[in-house]
Amino acid sequence: MDKKLLVYIFTLIVFTGCKNNTVHISGSLIGPSAGEYIYLDELNSEKLIPVDSMKIPENGKFSFKREVKSPSFYLLKINNNNFLTMLIGPGEKVAITTHNDSLNYPISVTGSEGTEQMAEYNKTLRKTIDKLTGLNKIYMQNIDSPELPVVIESLDSMAQSCLNEINSYTKSYIDKNLTSLVSLIALYQQVAPNVYVLNPSSDLKYFLKVDSSLSLLYPEYEPVASMHKQVQELVSKIGAEASVAPSSKEGSEAPEIALPTPEGDTVKLSSIRGSVVLLDFWASWCSPCRQENPNLVKAFNQYHKKGFQIYQVSLDKTKEAWIKGIQDDQLGKWIHVSDVQYWNSVVVPLYKIESIPSNLLLDREGRIIASNLRGEQLQLKLAELFK
Image (cartoon, rainbow, N blue to C red; front, top):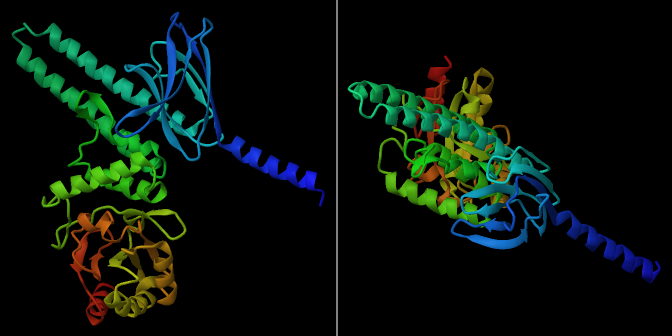
């Protein structure tokens, strides 16, 4: 091959690779103020890292270019109270149209799915904030009224209804975007200073969901690592409370688990409601677990067609060891999930797991029937259920 041609091909490959990582951000500001600057900052969990800036021209047009190797958060801002949070990925060409004084509520965003999703969420959040602001105005108008106690009671009821609506919307938004970094932002939204949409205690399972998903997909990304640390501290802080871990008493509902399979698909425990489910915690490095696996194979083969399913959660250290354990023990017929975090797995504090093997038998509605059934005990219980 001609050396010049080889050099040309190599240069083209390198150039193309760099080009694919280049993000173009352009936009138009309606009603720009003379002399103002617009800034592009990278968003870190603790600080903003300045990236670029430009003086806004009279026509309001602006543009930035940035090399991005993986999806990352950035702030497009005019000042600390006027900004747009963006989630941008390699190769995206983002186009934004917005009023100069309200970047956070753009008229249009194209070319960046993550930024579009966050902008859509912000519109719904804005409506909730506007409703709450309206209720506050009614309160101020009646502050000297003798009917104020009755007014307050009515306003409290309406405010709680607004908060419940945005709470439910946020949970649904997270469920739909569980594998996207936008779910991380949704965890920490506020309707007022220090008034959060999600409560870390009562909505803990959503913090665990996002943590388990993003920690696997983006383990090296600083905001995700910071969130993981916060969630672990949160779990440790309230881990003693009964609401965090399931009761072993019959009839208690097993908390939700949403973790990836070996193929990378997130499968929820609740997705197999309608079956009698053995929720089993194991690991390829656990000898007693491996010794018990043949009993699980026997039980599955005997009762699966009657409505029995196994949802097996691994506490393995590596994905390779986990998959090899599945293959060696011939466990491929049922559902396998893991965040491959060893004893740092999100299921450990959630289910207060102190040792493995450990399991829970769940009825068709996801309620706990029994715990730690092994060998003949499991066979007898399944025979009783499927008689």
